[in-house]
Image 1 (cartoon, rainbow, N blue to C red):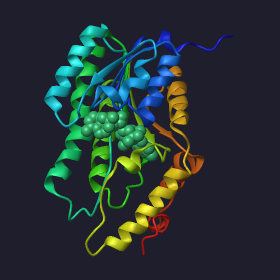
Image 2: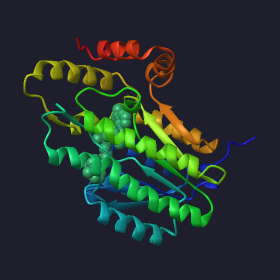
Image 3: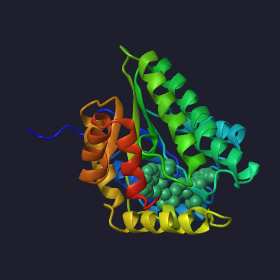
Image 4: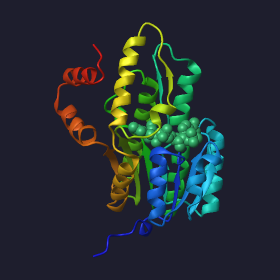
Length: 277
Ligand SMILES: NC(=O)c1ccc[n+]([C@@H]2O[C@H](COP(=O)([O-])OP(=O)(O)OC[C@H]3O[C@@H](n4cnc5c(N)ncnc54)[C@H](OP(=O)(O)O)[C@@H]3O)[C@@H](O)[C@H]2O)c1
C-alpha cells in the first residue's frame, strides 16, 4: 500500500524562520511533499534559495514587532486562502549571565520567542477553529526539560511556549485541531553562530566552559533534516502534544532517566554535563 501523502492533510503551510536551519529543513520537506509554503525571514534576500522552488512564497517578518507580525500573518493567510499547518519556528539564543543581561535584551527575547509566537499561534488556531481542522507546531526546545546555564531568557521563553502548547492541547481536545509541542535537542544549525554572547564578569571562565560544551554538542549533533523527517512522520500519524527530536541520548534516553531520577541527581547530572562545579 502506498504511503499516505502529506497533501491529504495539509495544502498550505506557514513557517517562521525559514531562511536556514530547522525552519528551512521544515520548508524543504513540505515543498518536497507538494505542500505550498509561505516562509519568513527578516530580509527577503535570505529566502532566495527557497524562493527558487515551486510552491514557495517569501514573507518578511520580524518577531520583534508583534503587532506588525499579526498583520503580516493575517494578510498572508488571506492571500493563501488559509493555512492548515503553521510552524512557529523562528528563534535565537542569548548567552549571558542572568544577573547581568540588559532589560532590553531580556524583554526582547520574551517578546520574540514567546509573545509574538503566541500572537501568531492564536490567530492561526482561530482560523483553524473556523475551518474545523489544522495543526499548529510550536518549536520549543529540550531546554524546557534541561535548562541551559546562562540562557535563562531562552529557557523561560521556551518553557512559556511549551506551557501554552499544553494549555491549548487541553482546550482543543476532541477537535480536529492538533497542537504539537516540538522539543528539539541539539541540531547542527547556525543557532550558536547567531546567538548573542556576553561572557564577562566574575563568571566569565564558567561561562566559557559551558559555551565550549554547547559548541561541541552542536557540532556532534544530527542535521536539521532529521528533525524535518521526524515532524513529517508525526504529522502523518496525527500526533498531538510533546514531540522530542534529536539524538537518541538527548531525545529518548535523557528524558526517561530524568523522570526516574530524584531531582537532586538530575541537577547533579546536568551540572556535570555542562562541566559546572
Ligand atoms: N539548533 C538547535 O540545536 C535547536 C535546539 C532546540 C531548539 N531550537 C529552536 O529551533 C528554532 C530554529 O533554530 P535553528 O537552530 O534553526 O536556528 P538558526 O539556524 O539560527 O535559524 C533561526 C531562524 O530564525 C529566524 N529568526 C531569528 N531571529 C528572528 C527574529 N527576531 N525575527 C524573525 N525571525 C528570526 C532566522 O531568520 P533571519 O534570516 O531573519 O535571521 C532564521 O531563519 C529556534 O526556535 C530554536 O530556539 C534549535
